[in-house]
Amino acid sequence: MTAPIPRDIPDLPAVPGPPLLLPSPVPATAVVAPVRRPVVALLRLLIALAAAAGVTLEILLGTPARTLSYFGIQATALLAIVMLMSASRAWRARRPLPSGMTGATHLYVVIAALVYHLMLARTTPPFSMTGATTIPERWHGSWATLQILHTLTPTAAVLDWLLLTPAARLHLRQTVTWLLCPLAYLAFYLIRAAVLAPTDPTRYLYPFLDVAAHGYRSTLANALLLGLAIYALAVLLVAVDHTRPTPVRRRV
Image: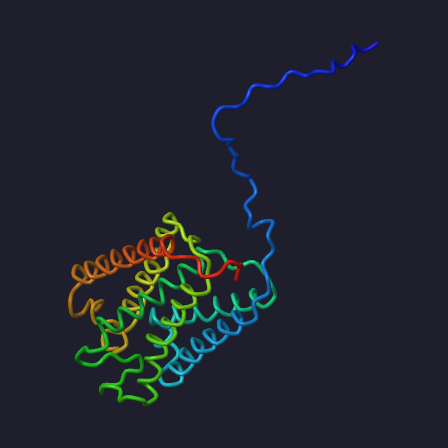
């Protein structure tokens, strides 16, 4: 036989302080399904098409081997792929791409745009991906292509990140990983220059990375300064991502 249950159960002592809520091991994003965003998908598709159009026009104006060797072209092509994938996921109500991938893509296109506008747009002789020796005239094909690559698509990508992407998705630990792609490009750039003939005019694509004019010491110093600038911009990107308000409440 069991003991009878007492009628009066004594009250338990109150727990001092406010109740503590333990963090859930499962993030909310794992249980909250994303919603279909057709407008966002359309906007990102337009960005992808603009980026792809800029790369295609530059290849048609020049030569594929030379054009595809530029960092700005490679960054814009990556942006076209990432935006197309993001548009597909927004249309089908799929979870967004990893923040490390999108953050790196935005960093690369912004770096390419800043390098063009601050260091290449007014050089003598004029900078050209097609080997032209004259300054591209406004609204001509070469000038319009450069604006698509270094003004239109980077601006659209940044606006997409600021206005259509939830905040606080980037992390400081990702910034070191983002430097691997520029470092790999530098190795590709120097190996390509070593393989080409010294008389080839396309041997060095960027004047500040011209070993024939500056030597390896100065060229690597310029590359180091540019790498530090890229890392500083990556840290700034993360800082802005954690201080800006979240523009949307639903996952896009």
